[in-house]
Amino acid sequence: MSYFLRGSFLCSTSRFGVGQMEGSHRTPLGLHRIAEKIGGGQPIGTVFKGRRPVGLTWAGLPDAAIVHRILWLEGLESGFNRGGHVDSYARYIYIHGFSDETTLGRPASHGCIHLAAAELLPLYDLLPVGTLVWIAER
Image (cartoon, rainbow, N blue to C red):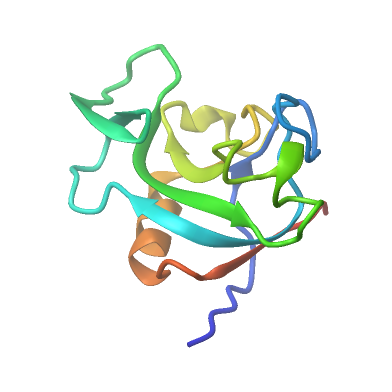
């Protein structure tokens, strides 16, 4: 099955710009796939640390948190976003919900792609592990 989502999503990418290198806190470009889906069946607003639900539901708490669901990405381009010091999976690059949705639409992450719950939750349910994801600059 193939999916092509036309249109755009209000998201947040790295405040440090795009880039591939480990430790850069930049959003990696190129072809990826959804390697793992984390959080299915958890309540909306569930807070994750180390990809595990911590038993809290975000309710306007001031600190930044990974919330709702996680789509963990794996790079598919050897030497560009896969392997060595550019490996997106080893860098823990996710598409995920973020506790401060007011940052959406401007660079604010440490390399991940933040989405609003209203957009992330349907995507999580629709897209299976293995779905291709293309990350590009505008």
